[in-house]
Structures are given as structure tokens and as C-alpha cells.
Length: 156
Image 1 (cartoon, rainbow, N blue to C red):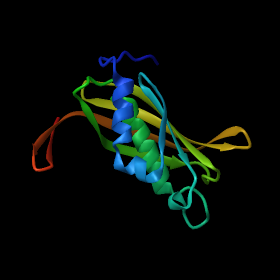
Image 2: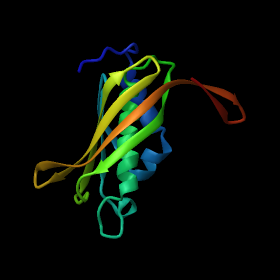
Image 3: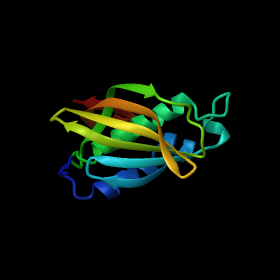
Image 4: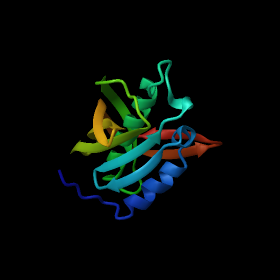
């Protein structure tokens, strides 16, 4: 599906937003590809993202896929809009064993208020891609306003 973005500078905006996001910085994630209605993130494996058996932790995978969905939705929003997650469902298809988790998010349907997205969690194994998780998410377009002293209000 092809999307037209009302913000011609969406790529610059996403890279700036991503670099200022605490969670992605803490995890060591990278924003590697941005296009209208789609993004790709990468997260190298390290002990901080693991669970007891040495796989990527399911919560980390969920965080990466949710972020990929949100940023995919943000690519097609006006410059002054934000997005928040309304809900998501994730299916874990296989243990996430490998050195690099790739999260590919894409917009499935863009509405005036709600945007439906999907993201795949991909592991690179022996030069081949393996889908280990899939998320479907609903994002809501919002306007964030600052109330003062670091407080924020959401206008839907």
C-alpha cells in the first residue's frame, strides 16, 4: 500500500524523535529505514535484552514492535500530530534466538483518528530471515500540549 504524507520532512522528524527517546537509547536500538507508512528498527543482542534462556525477552520484542508501529503511523501524520498506542496484540511465533532483532512496522489502514498498523519481529539466522513475532496495533492521532512544569495533556 502506498501512503502520501502531509509532512515532507517526516524522515528528519522521525530520526530526531527517535534519538531523543529514552527507551530506544537505553535498549541500544537503531532506526535504520523510514518511508511513508513504514519503518525498520534494529536491536543488537546484549545481556540487557535477554531472558533466562538467552533469547530476546518477549517484553523487549513487544517494545520494539510497538515502537515500529507507532513510528510507521507517525510517518503519515501532519507535522504537529503525535501518536499513542490504543491497543495491540502480539503473537510469538518462535524463540528469538540470534544476534539482531529487526522490527518492521507498516501502516495497514490510515483513518482520520485511528491508524491500524502491523509489525514483524525478524531474526537474522545464518543469512536468512525468520519471523519470530507479529503485532497488530491501533494508534490514535493526538495533539500533545504542555501544561507547564513538565506536565503534558493529550488532546484527541
